[in-house]
Amino acid sequence: MSPEDDAAAPTFAASYLAETVAVISALDTDAVERCARGLAQVRARGGRLFILGVGGSAGHASHAVNDFRKLCELESYAPTDNVSELTARTNDEGWDTTFAAWLQTSRLNENDAVLVFSVGGSSDTRRVSVNLVRALQYAEVVGADIFGVVGRDGGFTAEVARGCVIVPPLYDDHVTPHTEGLCAVVWHLLVSHPALARVGTKWEQVAAVDSAEEAALVAATPVGVSVR
Image 1 (cartoon, one colour):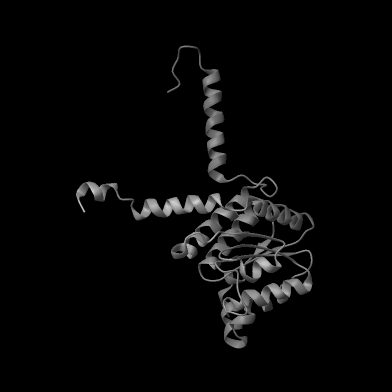
Image 2 (tube, helix red, strand yellow; image 1 turned 60 degrees about the horizontal axis):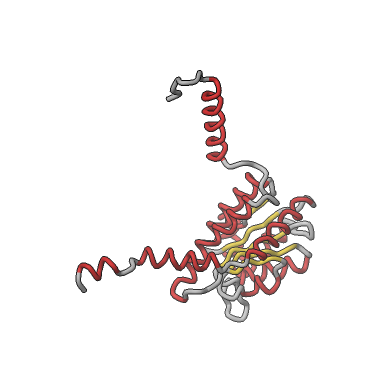
C-alpha cells in the first residue's frame, strides 16, 4: 500500500465513530420517552429507583444513581455500591439471588421501579446474568415498574419491561462497546429530559452566570469604551 493509499484508508477511530452515529440514529426515541415519563411517574408517587448492572454496567449504575438523585431528585440506589453486602450474599447464598435478595431487604414495592443496564438484557435459558433475571422476576411479583437500557435482542429485560431502550446490534464485532457506551448517552438523556430534570448541571450554571455578568458589564459600559 502506498503512502497515499494509507492516508486515504479510514482509521479505526473514524470507522468506530461512524458506527456509533449509525447506532444512535437507529435508537427508538419513543422508547426513551416512555422511560422518561414512567420514571417521572415513579418520582411523583414517592417511589424509589433501583438500578441494576453487572460488570461495566455496575459502574454505569453507580454513576446513574448519582445523576438521578442529584439532578432529578429521584431517590435512587444500586446494590453494587455496597461491596460488603454483595460479596456476603454471593459467598453465603450464591450469585444468582444477590440482587433479588437485596431488593427484598430494601422492601421493593409497587411504588418503586427497577432500571436495568445490560448488554444482553439477561437470559435464564442461556444462564447469562441470571441474578438480573431473578431480580426482575421479584420486581414482577411485587408490582414494581421495570425499565431497561440493553443491547442485542433485549433479553428478559425487554420481555417484562414497561419501557426498554434497545441499543441496536448493528455491528457484530462491537455490540458490547456500543451498548455500554450508548447506555451512558441514554441515561444522561433521561436525567436531562424536561420530564425528569430539576437541578441544573454545574458548568451550565457557571456559563449562565458568566454570560449574565458579561451582559451586565456591557450594559453599564459607556458607548465606545471596550469591556475587554
